Length: 401
Image (tube, rainbow, N blue to C red; front, side):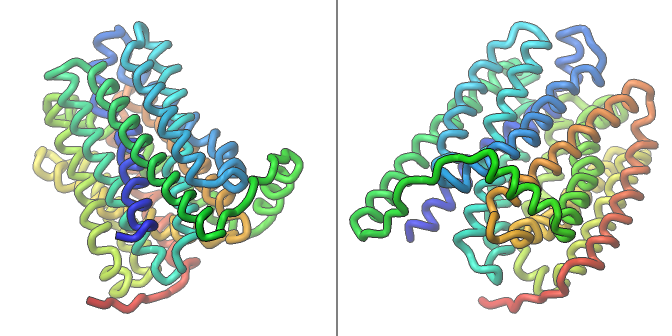
């Protein structure tokens, strides 16, 4: 196994834990609202706080990764996640829980986006979508594990144990990754390939770079599209477990299990990404993905039987990752000369969009409008898919055995 492939696998472990931490509260909302005597919408602040911090801190991690080294920042962020996960497990009140979740989001922000940027630096464009899809296997698996384990912990262990387990997972990932980074640095030093001391951070240079990126039409288009995608896709997804509990009478663990199918859809895409890209091209992936999301959301909103809602969850997951992986590739290519900053701006808008979507859907949950909001999101995603399919390249990659 080469050093780069080993590094990618270890980054995948950190990404797995990061996505698990992001989604682990989804099936907990009903239980948290009961324990802290608040509405489900109020309890959803634990999701919104994570998303806001995750998005805003991208503006910090982007230039930090460009100047200090992406791998170094990923390792530090993973260690910080281990610390804040432990703090979250001990939170005595809902405000403290929300604050600790915000710190978790701030720390986790330095993992997946900089991993994407590292792949953008290390992998040629022709292999980049396939490599990003491999990283997506780890992130989707983490999402599935987080959603299932969050529901399982509520019923079998207590929700605090979910964050204790996450803390151990983050600590293990950080330790393994740090060891590999040191091996790579030692190897580079022996071969005379060291990069020298990192450049000092300059706020003026960072602001100038960010301003230059935002003046580029392609960058503005990608950022606007991903913000809307985050609001319509991630914002609604956070309330699917609550929909399954309130609408179909499922338990928290069963609702978390249904949400695993969202991740299964993403995993199916990740494993088949290269062949589907060759068959459909980027345009076809974006359009078909949006249609699947729309269909899935409509089934989740209006299906009279739980079995149809389960199918909708799978379709929404498969479609979301078709569309989102296409946008990820655009993000890695929209400004190659400042890829770390560009990709983390992409993630910033994605999760700020998610936080706004969560807040909007939270209001609908407390008023009984969740089906209507899911329907509006379905229509919006289809429009989004049409726009994306008109702008991306029609590239088709040959499939090899």
